[in-house]
Image (tube, rainbow over all chains, first blue to last red; front, side, top):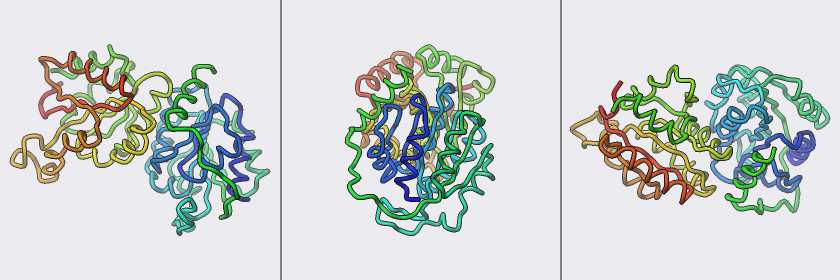
Amino acid sequence: MKRYEAVETILRSVGSDDLVLTTTGMISREAFAADDRPGTFYMIGSMGLLSSLGLGLALLKPDHRVVIVDGDGSALMSLGTLPLIAHEAPTNLTYVVLDNHAYESTGGQYCISCRADLSRIAEAAGFRDVRQTADPGELENHMRALSAVDGPVCIHVNVEMGRVDGILRVAHSPTQIRDRLQRHLLST
Amino acid sequence: MDAGRFWTILKRRGLTFFAGVPDSTLSAVYSAISDDEEVRYVPAVREDVALGISSAAYLTGEMGGVLMQNSGIGNIVNPLSSFNLIYRIPVLLVIGWRGAGGPETDAPEHWIMGEKTCQILDLLEVPYITQDDASFEKDLDELLRTMKREAKPGAVLVHRGAITQ
């Protein structure tokens, strides 16, 4: 499956109250292109920071499901956050990592995730539930089953390299992204 | 100032969600909340992770805080410059200031950052105060006003021995 298909599947499978946070680079751009929903927060910079922001939100907003959509490179950049998530153990947190074994947003450079198995790392970190898939139907099933599962859940998704043509940058400014999520949280 | 008083002052201003990395300068500050149910403290693994966690509070309409040592300022330059300062997300940074008195007063690893702490905050245009018992509440209120008005993080620098059990 292409990364775009994974992003589209995730956004199609979440509820309107669920908060979706997407990491810097192509993952945020593809999420913006697929479905620019009010409960999504695009992290346009600060590689590696998304998982900790998502942890904070999950702890503060236990009534919302928080879905963090990270990449392999940003997951490895903040690897210490994974055991911290497991330690704090918010049941409403889902950590999805889209793994194409490359830094594709910066030109497709080699990433060590081809040897460092992020599923096994998430298991060792103490995630309550770890799933791995390369199939869009299975990814959708995992996503739709989340309401019946206590997190933290990690879904490790193997995706292919390759961009979809015509994916633009996120059109909202950083403060617009911030304000939109604040408003969404106030209204739900 | 004792740590209980310090926390009373922060809590009265709605600051109850913190993440951080330990620092000996602030040891009394950490131990004072070990069984305080009014303060949520997440023991982060790095200062940038602590900043990410506490930044979430602003998205929920509150303000979060970070407890850290000034040696960790290096770790938050990236999230400050490419997250908090562009999304305009205030967080109160409570920073233990090792090496504040110059190289003779502290261990070698604190010499450089001890001297450069204020310069780095100035360079990033992050407002800060130095904790001083005589005027702390007034200084903190002024800092928080600036942080809210400009929607940016701000720091309280704490000298060794300034906050006690």
